Image (cartoon, rainbow, N blue to C red):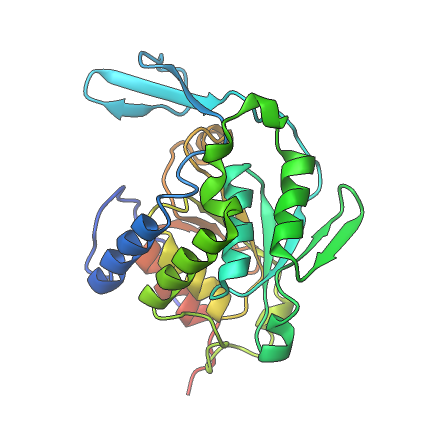
Length: 279
């Protein structure tokens, strides 16, 4: 932990002096290219616009308190899926988006190098004792089968931006290039022992431009990390309020140092300070 480090005070939806404005804009543009895929869980619905003040998540808009959920996602798996991933791979991106859509918590293990990338994406699913190597379509099919609802319960257009391979790969590649193809290779100053660190935990809403730089930094440093997806309608929004008394993303929990913190730009600075080799 950096000497004298004090986590910043959370400031929801605030561009701070540490925010990379150029990166903020490209994150929004990349989101638009992918049609905001992952903004909502599959089967998203509004439960009420007059939610009571009962300690559960609700979006406050003027006089309205909007509570939402999913009408189709009700499966709970006990073990975390492991995804071997490269942040700049459009095929890996398809898999990550499907996990967000299905509200799946998963552990991401960044991988680098042309030979390794040929095998990606790869998942290990301990819930069904299955490993799938180099097959984004196969992985997506597996996730829908094991974690999704019956196909009759939702509109197939809800998964179309992911399942239509040509569109998904083309727009994902454009979004990745717009972001500068971050994490194609590991950051040269990354600590050599990053790969064996305890997984950091990132509570994330994929559509937030404050989240994307944090996810990219974790990946380019080669740090294993668990993604707790918090798309609209996710049960994890209530879980965060139970845990810390508020909902705000990104939220990082670092089991290696004991640090828990909000604020995307400051999280990036923290990761750079702790997990890189100094000259």
